[in-house]
Image (cartoon, rainbow, N blue to C red; front, side, top):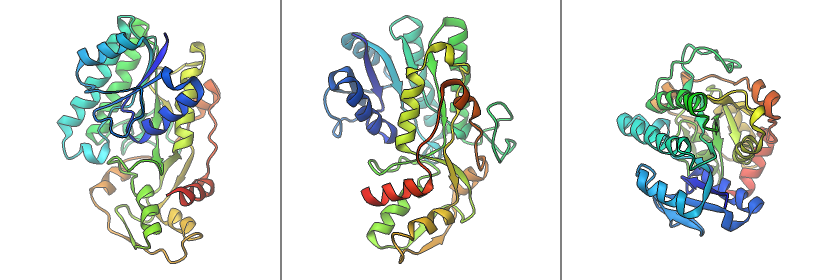
Length: 306
């Protein structure tokens, strides 16, 4: 039946990915699943993605050939429970990898993150290949996951594809506990007319991406011919980079009375370990990646929708 299963469909990426996949392929061809399904439209399943029997049952029942595995505990939240973050992020990956190894699934998308980089990585234009010393449980699990993806491809022929997402910005869902959540929260403060207190310092530059581009990238990578995929760990992916101060000034064009203050917390240390910008030339050359939204376009769309 060649259906698609999205695991973690109620999250920040999954919410918009399911909508776009269903628009392209038909509602019944895209199965949504999450630990809670109150915000999901049918067809959907309540699913504990750490339970291999339950995942297998859905894959077999629905005739799933393609899986987008989006389950993860993000960077800031994961630092509060590092062992739990590791267990969740790795176990859910292995369940899907092993199903593909058995021939139950033909193709997998698994997102990695700029969290795989660390203090020794190039801060400007971090390259596809270079030093990686992640400082968070989330980043460690993503780097390990990348290598397992490559291992399963090389040893078992598993067609798994991955991209290293930068910070993601969306108005459809609440922030999920990441280090770049400030870039979403500031829009809600602006709309409510409240001063925004940033948990990152004013000059903290980070790679960012609007969710429409993030969804487009995932689908584009999955639809690319397999011979175009040269990297089986995870592709660097980039769009824009900016600081909290630069974002604030852009939003003030729409909310002139918006005020901001800065009170960096533990997330500042995480952000300081990440690159300011990313070199994604391999993704652009191999499978034609090209982002659409710059800072001005993103801010305008967020202001119109938040």
